[in-house]
Structure formats: C-alpha cells, structure tokens
Amino acid sequence: MTAEIVISAGTRTPLGNYGGSLKGVELTDMAGHAARACVAKSGIAPDKIDHMVFTTTVPTDRDTLFAARVVGVKSGIPEEAGALHVVRACASGLQAILSAGQQVETGHSRLALAGGAECYSRAPHAVASARWGVGRGPMQLEDMLDWAYRCPFSQDYMGETAENLAEDFQYDRDAMDDWAEMSQARAIAAIDNGFLARQITPIDVPDGRTTRAFTTDESVRRDATREKLARLRPAFREGGKVTAGNSSGVTDGAGFVIVGDRAAMEAAGGTPEARLVDWHVVGVPPRIMGHGPVPAIQGLLDKRGLKVTDIDYFEINEAFAVVNLHAERHLGIPRDLHNLYGGGISVGHPPGLTGVRMCMTAIEHLKETGGRRAVLSMCLGAGQGMAMLIERV
Image (cartoon, rainbow, N blue to C red):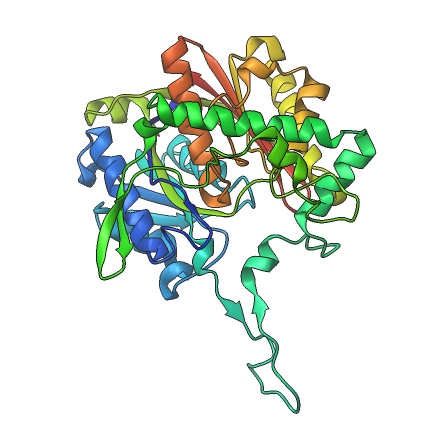
C-alpha cells in the first residue's frame, strides 16, 4: 500500500452462545449498537465518517439483505455516507477491514467504519420448492445455518474437513484436546484480568418482560477440564478426533473498528493504533480447508521479506484445534506468541466478527507488550486461507 491506512477504536459486543443471550436481538440493532460505541470510543464526530463497510454471512432478519446500509444509518453516521457489504466466508471480518482500507487508499473514503456481525441464533429456514408450488407431498424446510457449515463441493460438514486434515498430517486427539483446554484457560485469564473487557461494549438484551445488561462472552467454559474434553465423542466421524470441545463454538456478536487515512483520523481527533500493511489470500483443496493459514501466512511473509521470527504476535481463528496445530508445525509459530487470549474454541467464532475481534485483540497485545508486528489469519470454508499484517503505530 502507498497510503498509510490506520486502524483504531476496536469495540465489540460480548459473544453470545447459540440460542443464548443475543437470540432476541435483531442483527442490525446489535451491529448498530456496536458501531455507535466504536465511533464514541474513537473520539471522532460521527459526521466525519464517510463510509460503512459491513459483513454478515447468513441473512437473518428482514433488513439484513441491506445490512451495510441499515447498520450505517443506525450507527449515526451521515445518511450521505456510502455503504458496502462484503463477504469472504470465515475471513469476512478481515475483508471488511481490508475493503475499507482499499477505499481509503484509492481516495474513495477518508474515514470508514469497518465491521461485522452474526446472529446465527436467528438464522431462518428456507423452503426452496415453494416459489412455484409443490405438486404433491410435503415441502422440505432447509436450515440456512446448516448451509453455512457445509462444504459447497462435498456437502460434508466443515468438521469433516478438519478430520481430513488431522488424518492427512497425523495430528492426534490428545494434542487437539490439549489445545482446546489451553484456549479455554487463556480466555478465562483474559476475562479475569480485564483484557477482553477493554474491547467489549455491554448491550441490553431481552430477559423475560424486562432487559438486562449482557457484559461477558458466554461461550467460555470454566469447567472444560482435560478429563471432560477427553470424554466427548467425535462429532463428525465415527472413530474421529474432532469433537465439540476442540471445535469453535456457534456464537453471535457484532464489532467494529475505524479504518482511515492517518492524517484524516488525526485531524478528526482520533488516535491511530495500528497500520494495515499488507495481506495475502490463497486457495487450498476444499477437503483440507484448515490448511489455508499455512500458505496464506507464508505467502504474506515472503511478499514482505519477513520471517516468522520477525512477527511479535499471531492470531489464527481456531475454527478447529487442528488448524492451529497445523500452522504451528508447518510455520514454526511459537505457542507463547499465538492466540494468547483464547480463540474460536473458547470465545467463539462468528465469521462476520472473528477477523475484527482478532484485529482488536492483536492491537491490544502489541500496545501492552510494545511489540511491532502481528499477523491475523484464518482458514475459509470452501478452501481458502487469508492472512493480514498489521503494525503498531
């Protein structure tokens, strides 16, 4: 990139369990709440924001086909601001940041809100045969959330692709459960020491006839002992290694960052925290989509003339424990610089939000430790990998 694209003011809701605290909140209301909080945290007047870049991977309520525009209006930025909806499977949150940066770089925006949301708890069912009528027999309801979790080529669940990765590269169940236990422990520590609270804006959620403040990620399991993880049955394949315990959780949530030209951000009263340096996207065999972070990260490092040892921190989405084990083994990523605050297995993995959450976590880590560079990466359903490089300002 030639322009200096900077990122600031990351803010998100707590993540809710599937069918949990956020199931009664419409997606654009949840996202609008997080977007308003992000602008307030930034110190930038809403009328200085000229674009909304938004992502969600499964339409839920009536207005989510127009979600970028609706969330933009609900966020309080000017009606004159543009709106763009982007989707790149599990990397959709990163893509929202990237697309906002590209708009700034090309002079089509100066300051943008970039973020995403999912409310999988509200995912609808579809009747594909109803449009032109059914001659005889029952109409079949199809779960649109089920569509999101199946490979479009094989129709296998994504967990089957994790089983393929574990089989092809000989990762064992014990190592996967060890990673899962560590993820939970790291997330618990990050909750208890206040690290995660610094990126969370509470949100009021329905509670019977009244409401309550929802403040803390609810998918983190304090009872996820190694012994309990070992007792879980394989979730996708008889005799397999992938379980509910070493897979990411189905969760809801919304979050945003401000992306803009550094001079414009500073002139508007904002504080740049990191710069967007570069990114790399690759395709991989869909049957082992969890391989994606390896060539994506390696390609990004090669492109910039960097090595793993030049990176101070890594965030990888933790769709399945085997994905992170695979990246560690093949790239030599140190475990003490990798997902230190939990990940998809513990905190949860709503695809529209995960990249944004990872970005704000990495920025906070660099600020705390004085580190310079962080790499954010994930595997993508249907067989891709994406990696992004940011640097602390």
